Amino acid sequence: MAKKSPVKSTPTRLAAIDVGSNALRMQVAELLPGFVLKPIKTLRSPVRLGRDVFGNQAISDGTMKKAVSAMRSFSEWMEKLEVTQYTAVATSAAREAANGKQFLETVRKESGIDLQLLAGEEEARVVYMAVSRRLPLGDRTVLVVDIGGGSVELILGKDGRVQALESMKMGTVRMLQRLGGSSKDFSRRAREYVEATRSWVDYWLQQQQVDLFVATGGNAEELGDLAQRLFQKPSNDVVSLSELDHIVALLESMSVEERQKKLNLRIDRADVLLPALLVLQTLMRQLKMDSLVVPHVGLKDGLLEDLRFQVLGQRPDGLEREQVLSSVLQLGRKYDFDEAHARKVTELSLQLFDPLQPIHKLTPTHRVLLEAAAWLHDVGKFINFSAHHKHSHYIIMSSPLVGLTTQQRTLVAAIARYHRKAEPGVQHELFRNLTFEERNLVVKLSALLRLAEALDAEHGGMVGQILVRLNKSKVQLTLVGEGDLLLERWAVATKLAPFEKALGVKMVID
Image (cartoon, rainbow, N blue to C red; front, side):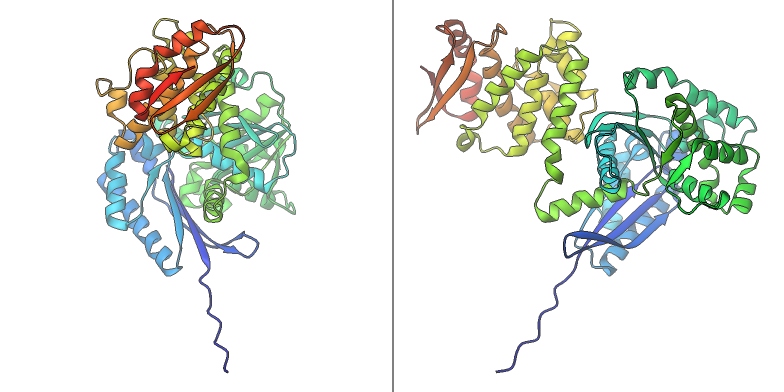
């Protein structure tokens, strides 16, 4: 009997698209045996969205046409290369553009690419993940400086986790537009602009000693290449401060046209390189760093890593929950929250969530959202006890939470806001802005949080455990703890109505 010819399996190919302020980029990689990513195609289109947005607050028709044409080309390449899965994100310029939504819709309609806005904190998380996979960071305190066209992301990491992050509106294209990039005194203005952030950076670092300074982005990579050529170095991945000083002085002595000719820089790199290097130079001097490392990875690489884990049905090193909770705790401590009470309410919330899963039918991701909201529900007391639930909502919405998307952070803020006083309802704009599914989620999780908060209303930690028993007609709660728990029983009894309405089941307390 003849053997059948083996069927050739289709390779898994992934693509990451980064619609930045200075250019549009796409990287395609193939997932090899052993789940290693092998880059097979890199494309770049020098469409400068930031020139329009940072000057006129909107993307012009001409620039939009160029960007859409580039995205259409990316789509054609993905089809030609048989890409099986992709992710496409837009950063600060698209986020800030008055017609940003129209831009996303036009891209989707004309190219078929589902382009999504990427929050600054999520951008930082993805970049840090890419860096941590390229460099052996160990237990060192690492500062990653990701310089883009619209913003500079500062990411402080230790032990493989992001400790703090901040997005500064100090990107290269933004500086060119605001400070007159073609003027003779641009360098002086840019230095003053960057120097003005010194005291803020000191405050942000909270006196932490940085062990490793890492620079990412196209300008950082160009710096590495220049240093290698000019100083005849064997590699392009480490640049000393003295080498950086020399290159900055060299760029300042040349016009943009001279930089193109003498240093062989692309036209869209020759003007933005100087402001990028001024940022790095200022930060290195401030932190007393002798050198910086260029890992030659960035947002695209991190996006591909995320895609790889999605294909494998995994989360990157369990990063999400632990990273979210690390960021949440840092935010709570920043606003001097009652950590013991927050911990107790979180424990009680999860003791309700887990056994009630057959009723609420929510997922592990939703569990993390509840956990984050429970930790931060009272953080608004830093502003004022009165209406502190509203202040909590404001603080959460205004703060970066690493590991959460912008929409997930919105949900955490809403859950925390509804832990007391008025129940979720369309009379509130924040609730009206949610989708039907999101409203349903907020109703359920805030009902659980209300119960947990009621069980520690006096911040005494009296309730140690909640025993939950389910049957067809009701949920039975048994409280285990110190004393008779009469106050806690009474408090939780006043919160039963929202719970019963949200989950559609009767509850009784032993």
